[in-house]
Image (cartoon, rainbow, N blue to C red; front, side):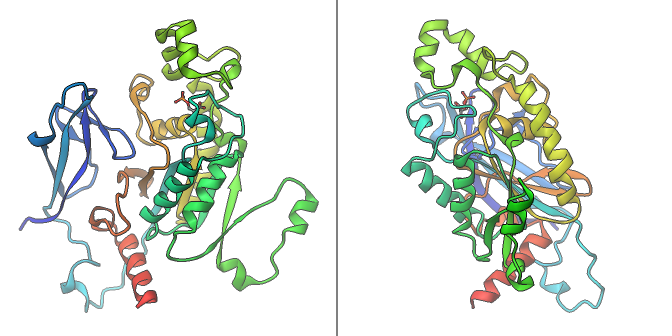
Length: 345
Ligand SMILES: O=C(O)[C@H](O)COP(=O)(O)O
């Protein structure tokens, strides 16, 4: 028997077929969002009320109605509460991606790349809001770029987490740094989350565009040229990195360092940048170099993936800490949240 599990707005359909405000601008082909979950049926409807406002690129609010057809989640099913069957060990892990909050150069509309600029007040608020949205999702390891805007975002987001573990930056840069940052209590270690920073998650190096105003650069070199520098896959800006070059180091880092953690069941958060995350999403979602061109990420919006049986399942962007869509299908996440609730009550 089919039972509707949740029904909610998941974003705004744009003319280019992507969903805005879902964190990830999710692709819709032939009116259907790909939702790779067995046993669930996704029905989409476009709310006419919000359709096609003139001068806007928004083409309507997408409503998703997800029906469970055959799979029953053991956590959500009271009938399974008293079963004596041993629970299968779950081999899934959560992966959260966050683009840093607004930086002082985002605000000034300057090409930033690898220049190390902090967050604005609004960026700080975005990071805190992102933290609220993921405050019920387990985080065992945090990866950030070497840049302060990503590190601020990760740290501020974690101030909102209900588990209250302490994120601690790991200093492996020298023998002395390692020795001087040791922790001598196993209990304290258990209450902390290692934060690993790597330049390989940095924003793409924008070459000689760094520090230039985006609008002035478009006025000077032409809109098309600047669009090509910003969004083509393999054309680098003058003396900078193309998205392809950025992907070479960011995706290699993801595969070498982060994927093994997910495979071992660790829940991971990555705080990074527009282009390093676009390249990682290209890998996770198997986008072509053509498809990635229209992928845009908003600042400070967390995106959730579930890593299960070697596959990445995109779960979109949690809009609220207790959003049903996040917990409805994932026994591990539902159990984690239940434990948090019990800890508080
Ligand atoms: O580095 C920058 O300027 C931005 O963070 C990303 O810029 P883009 O959207 O122009 O690639």
